[in-house]
Image (cartoon, rainbow, N blue to C red; front, side, top):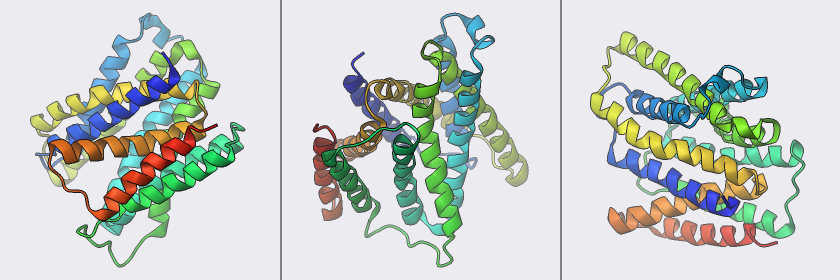
Length: 287
């Protein structure tokens, strides 16, 4: 599949996941219900896409290591985000999670030796500015007075590293073992999330809602294909283009669909952010 088309489909899948979460907000008190349903669905889908099931037991060590690290980082980034929201507020936490984009971009320069041109650098700067516009909202709650910078940096780093694992595997992994990699990734994420869910139930008595679990299934399908398609895009397009376009393009799709079909009104900041996203995508794709 063409890498540019893979990137477009990855953005659509990622936006679909965000919209599904909007439609099926958590009903139960246990916050890990939808997440567990999501990862279990991804694990089952990944298993079905493994052609020779014995390959799961005989994969290259790099496949296991990358899958284990990525699965753990997926859940760790979520825990850091939830903890930061309760300590620092939604505004700062959301902004720093989006700034995690800086991590894969830095790795693409230092570790993968990818060099953006002047126009791509301008596009990257415009992406960061557009994210700032989307993060601002006149009606959002104020962050807590006692801000934890260390926790905010943890949000930035863990979100950035979890995103970076796709590029790490595309560089050091075995191409024909990608289905095994995703199976291991989501299996690890499912097991870690299950442990957190049980701990939440035993500590606070919060029960798992079957509705949340079912909603997680709807979220998991686009989540799996978004991850697969993003990796395919990284196999043919430099990371300093893929990650900003994926991030800003997903924001653009979600915002447009929310405005057209859910009748959410865009304020001036969001409209400005949309224009900047379009400008950044143009610059990033100019040679």
